[in-house]
Image (tube, rainbow, N blue to C red; front, top):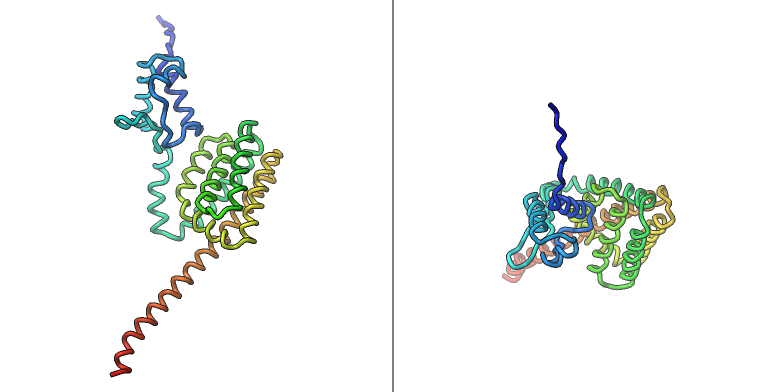
Length: 265
C-alpha cells in the first residue's frame, strides 16, 4: 500500500534558505554583521528560537560565524577557498600574472555585457552613485580612495550581471589583484594624460550599461583591461629600472669606499 506523506517545510529552514540566498547574491557580504538576535527576529517575523536554529545551520556550513560578545558575521568562505591557494601560487609564479589579467578581461567583459542586459533600476541607481564617487575622486590626490572606488564600481557591475558565480569570482579576483590595482593606479596617477584616459574608460563602461548596449559595454570593458595590462607592464618595467639603478648606485658607493683608502695610502 502506497501512502502519500506531506512534506512539512520548517520555518527555520525557510529562514536559513533566505539568508543563504542573500549571501550567495551578495546582499550580505563577507564581514557584514547581522542585526542583534532580537531585532533580526522582529525583522524576519519569526521567534528567536527559530532564528537561532536557522543561524546555526549557516554556521555549520561555514557561511556565518559568531564572535563572543561581538555578534554574528558573514564569513569569506565562498571567496577564501578560491583566493588562498591562488594567492600563494601567483606570488611564487610571476608568469601567472598575465593569465590572471586575461581571465579578468574575459570576466569583466561578460559582466558588463550581462549588466547592460539585466541591470534593474535599483542596480542602475547604485551604479550611478558609485560612478559619481569614482569620477569625483579622480580630481583628488587620494590614491587609496581611488582604489576603493574603482574596486566598488567594478564589483557593482559584476553584481548587476545577476550571475552569482560572476559576482563571487569578481570579488575573489579583486582580492587577488589588489596589489596590482594599487601599483597601476599609482603609476597612472602620476601621468595626467593616462589618468584622464582611465577616467574616460570608466565613463564609457558606465554609459554603455545605462544605455542597455551589451556589445558596447563588453568592448568598453575589454579595452579598459587592455589599457590596464599595458600600463601595468610599463609600471613593472619602470620599477625594475629603479631597482637596477639603485643596485648600481650601491655598488658604486661600495667600490668608492674600498678604493678610497688605497688611493690615499
